Length: 150
Image 1 (cartoon, helix red, strand yellow):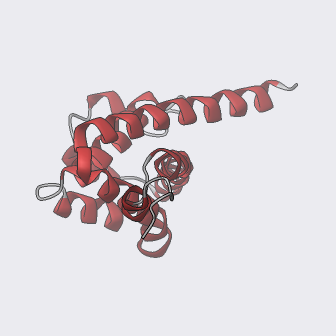
Image 2 (spheres, rainbow, N blue to C red):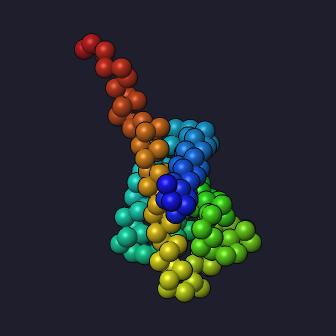
């Protein structure tokens, strides 16, 4: 296996591990509001593709004060980018919060902006998968085991 394929596999593995921990944390913190997290994680990639990363980050920023789920999603993104082995954001470790990340994104060169958009989409691919797998829909929870007799 070439070094490039090996490093891509390692990067995907890292994304998957980190995303799994993010979803587990969201479940524990949000309790009965975990469905909101699942819903938002599923919608954000389309927002990025439709409106761009900057506008999507601004949207998350506007919602996080009223929604713990959006706050957690912002933290997930920032913490992943701080760990990112590709180092797309050169000074990511200096960014203190999601607000700072939004400011940083507005100052990126076009090539950095595109690379960051692709990395965030790749990360959300894993977040979405794990959220769908680990967080039951409310209707599934209400249905129970399906053995209810009427």
